[in-house]
Amino acid sequence: MALNTEVIFANDFYSKMNMQGKDILTLHELTTEEIYKILKTTDFLKKQLKKGEIYKPLKGKTLGMIFHKSSTRTRVSFEVAMWQLGGYALYLNQNDLQLNRGESISDTAKVLSRYLNGIMIRTFSHDDVVELAKHADIPVINGLTDLTHPCQALADLYTIYEYKNRLAGLKLAYIGDGNNMAHSLLFGCAKVGMDISVASPKGYQPNENIVELAKDDAKHTGSKILITDNIKEAVEKADIIYTDVWASMGQEAQKETKINALKDYQVNSEVVKLATDDVIIMHCLPAHRGEEITDEVIDGPNSVVFDEAENRLHTHKAILALVI
Ligand code: CP
Ligand code: NVA
Image 1 (tube, rainbow, N blue to C red):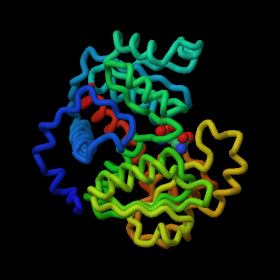
Image 2: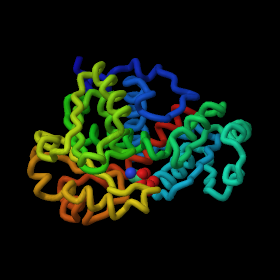
Image 3: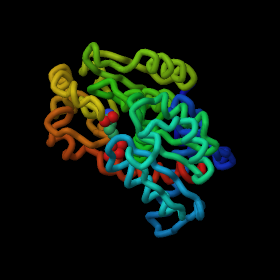
């Protein structure tokens, strides 16, 4: 069954869906309808902001933002999102919580639930985020783990919709490390009926369990999923080319090995020529220019990376307004 994005965007059913209290841990755990609900709300809030209309549904609400890794986009956009929605965001780094001195995740979750209305967390272990969500009475939003980056993938789907006016039936080619970003795009594409091909060298391909889960989702939407080491095969007829850094946060010690293993998987002009003429180029940023992507491509006419970064703000507003 192929999904029709335009029909879904026009369908009023989604305005009646309630996502209050929902955790955002991976896109696999959201339904197709919930993902479209977030995308439609993003569209509404972005258009409203551009018209200068301010909508403040989160007056008196507080979001705790726990960061165990660096961040420019996630940190700033979540903080601004809370402020624009009328709420308050509390930035908590590694040294600000007793978690750092051995307090358990479950006790931390129970205590924070007494003060806050939501938690956004960026950390290493995905299991820690699952544990936090299990013991918290408030929604927990995954702001990136070693396994997934769902908020980024939601902003990416919205950006694709803005440029292509549909999602289902498009093809995304992800080139490079089969990392947290590749995993979230696999889930996201499978949920909305987009085809996805991931080209990575052997040993750096996406986690097999994630691929299997995405394939299960794809059975319901008609998405085709391909994991290959062949860039040409992945990029053929692609509407979107996506890449991400070769060494993610926490992999600093493997940086040289990974650069060496992935050096033939650069998104450069030759690779872009293999796709459709109106292909859009995406990257979650931060980019390591000259490694996974060339200046010419990231600064070129097909690149949408800064709209993509901007859309983090609008998507986070949608997520926060819906789950808090
Ligand atoms: N794309 C992304 O999550 O960026 P930051 O690491 O700057 O938050
Ligand atoms: N894969 C990258 C994404 C950064 C937003 C990392 O985890 O560092």
